[in-house]
Length: 88
Length: 425
Image 1 (cartoon, helix red, strand yellow):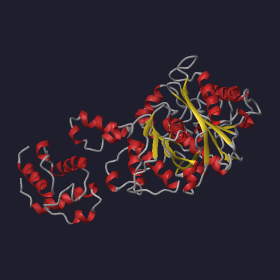
Image 2: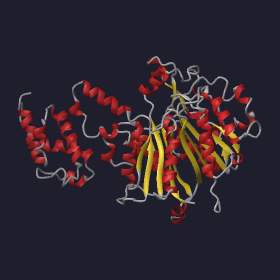
Image 3: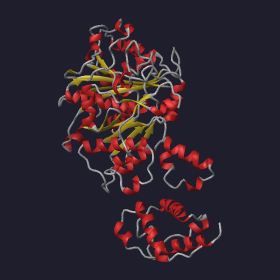
Image 4: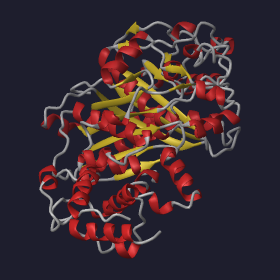
C-alpha cells in the first residue's frame, strides 16, 4: 500500500469532520494538535461516527483499542496510517 | 379552583397540509391528503392508499443545527420536531437559546418509535455490522426520541414525558399537559403526538382487515367516516403540537390566546362489558365523556361542536350512539359533528393532536370543517342524529364550547373540552 502524505489525510479528515462541528472557522484552521472535543467542540459520543466515516473512507478497520488513542487530529492520522499499512 | 389553561401556539404536519396556514386552508376547502401508494400494490396490501404529509428531513434545516440534523434518519421524530418547533414559534417564542426553561415541560406521545431506525439496526446486526451503526441510532430507537429532541431544542426543564395510548395518545398528551398546569406543577407545556406509518406498520394493520380496501382507484374518497360505504380506516402519518400555558403567565407575556382548555378525562373500559383489545366498552366511553364535561364544568347542552374519533369503521355508529347518550342529545338537537379523518385518514397516535389543532383552528376562525365523502350516510347513524348535524360543506359558526374524543386499542378513551377564550370566562 502506498503511504499517503499526512497533509493529504489531514485535508480529507477536514471534510469528514464537517457535519460534526458547528465551529467551521476552527475546522478550516486545523492542524495536528487540534483537539477534536476541546477545539472543535465535537460531542464526545460522535467520535464513534467520525471513526466509522474514516473507516469507510480508507477501507480500514479501526479496532476499539486504537480508537481510544484518538483525541486530536495528529493521533487520528497516526491511526489511519497505521491501519492502512497493516494487512487486513 | 386552580388556574385557567389556555392554548397559545399551534403546529402541524398533516397529510393535507404542513404548517398552520396550509392545514387551515385544507380544512376549510375539504381537501383530502390521502394518496395512492404504488408500493403498497407491489407489497400485495389490500389497502393501497394512505395519508402521507409532504415532508422532507431537510425541512428541519432552520430548526436543528447541522450537527443535530446530520444522522437524523427517521420521519417520525422529524414530524414531531417540525410541529413542536412551529407551535413554539407560533406562541411568540424563539429557538436556539442557551436558556433553560425550568417552568416549561413537554408531553409528546407516539405508538411506535422510529421504524426507519429499527430497520437499519436489524439490517446492520444481521449483516454482522453492528459496530457500524454509530452513536446516533439509539436516540432514534427510543420511544422518547421525539420528546428528547423537542426538549433539547427548546431547553425544557420541567416534566418531559412520553406517553403512549394507541389512538388516544395525542389527546391524552394534551390532557396530561393541561393537568400539570392546572395542578400548578408547571406553567407551560408543549404537548402533542407523532406517528410515521411505514410499510411494516401499515402491513400489520392491513392484515387485521380493518383498512379501507375498496377505494384504491379513488384515494381521496377512501376515508369515509359515518358513511354507508365506510369499509375501514385509511392509515395516516404526521404530528400535531400545541403550546398550553397558565393564563396569568400567557397574559404577563402578552401572548395571543387562541382558546381555553376547560378540562377532560382519560379512562379505560377495562376490556369488559363488550370492550375488547380492539373495541371500546360503551360504558367506558360514556363515563369518559360525562366525566370530561363534569371536569370542564359544562353540560351536554353547552357543546356546539364534536370533533369525533370516527375512523370510518363499524365503530362509527357506536361512537355516535355513545355521544348522544352521554350528552342526552338526539336528532336535530345533536351537536354539529365532524371527523378530520375524512380528509387525512387515521394518523393513529398523531390523530388526537392533529385533530385538536383542527378543532382550535375552527374555534379561532369560527367555522366547522366539512365531513368529506359523506354522500351516503350510514342509515343506522341517521336513526340517531339528524344528518344536518353532520355537515358536508364548510359552515360559518361561532363555536363557544367544543368536545374532542379519541379511543384506542386496549380500550383506552380520552375526551377533552375546549372553549373560545373569554376574559371573564
